[in-house]
Image (cartoon, rainbow over all chains, first blue to last red; front, top):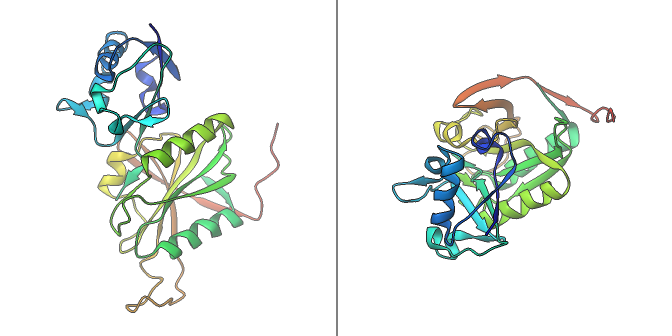
Length: 90
Length: 151
């Protein structure tokens, strides 16, 4: 099983500069755990207190995961996951 | 230093004035690595607030998808402050996530009188780099047109 995960500029220091990496997982939560194995430290940038960070957006096949189950969103082979930090401020 | 053409500069200022007293936000995209702000993209402030801005998550996705397809990146990320100076707030600094971008702040605080009428004072327009929580102001040079592309 391979799921392509697109990594934003700000997190590419965890992926050796790669814009996209492959990972496995039947859910977003499992996928992030798998990412962490190969890219230690990245999980903490995505998750806080057991949930997705407020200002991190994750999309599965163009859909914001917050609308499809959040960390429990189901994934299958060939899905594309995109991580984008929110563009926000005060 | 940020070099920006007059039409794009004016476009950002006009957007900020139009959305006042809410914060306006957007990007100026340009070819990856070029440092050329070529394509102004006004975004909707999903927060609709005078003290906060956030791109709508679906709009954000579409924007990055489009930039990706065009081999572009956000050369400028801009937003307005409507009651305070054009300097990054603590929130702006904490959430800044494009280390290669010029963060443009415009302030419309002096542009309107108490009744909301225009008093013709200029919009403050300043630019910063925000990297790892560190803010560095930079000079803004407005040109009639960006110089011809070198490649």
